[in-house]
Length: 255
Image 1: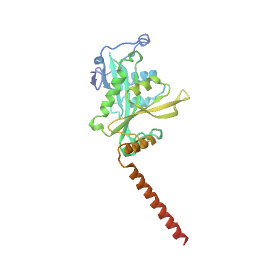
Image 2: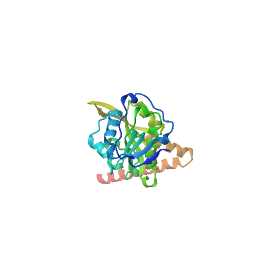
Image 3: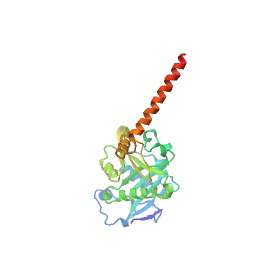
Image 4: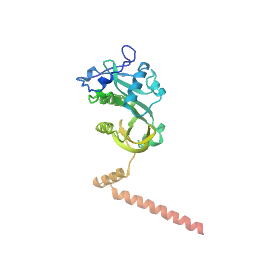
């Protein structure tokens, strides 16, 4: 299992690999040599260089300052190997009520006062991919979110470009499910790109019911003999009672 510490041993940012080395893949024979630790201010330049290489989105300087701050509210975890950051994950926990309009509808209404986790970034240095680094980082986040003190977090979600098939397959293999299609969600180099929203429900969180869920529920009542027809008769009786009462009140108004 990878070691886990808060800060690098020398307290300094690490140097980048040369472009020559970046062109080849490196196989890690053991993840035990990979150290997991939270980002610190000394990582800013290296993290910024990594993100500019990994992601098509340009993040402002203050974002890097925030995720590398010693008292950051972000969950910013780095994977370090041979004194360099080879992967990182950045996530944020926020109340469900704080979500943007396009992100609402993730949880059922009964979870409206719960929290939700948003993965902003997950990346691995190109030559170290397919070594389980991304899985190690994601699993560390999910393990943290499923501790007793995080029971209020009911879902984890993220956005991804519709063209990023590698990321989509990665999250689908880890039981994230497609929740929404977001047309023109990204603005990359002055061009709009479509996105997907993927969601993973944790800590007994549940999505809102769909028409399919209601049909499945009623079919289950029929199959289990749970009184589907009495339920229908009761609701028909209520409807007739409402219509009769409405009819009588209308006649009284005419008199």
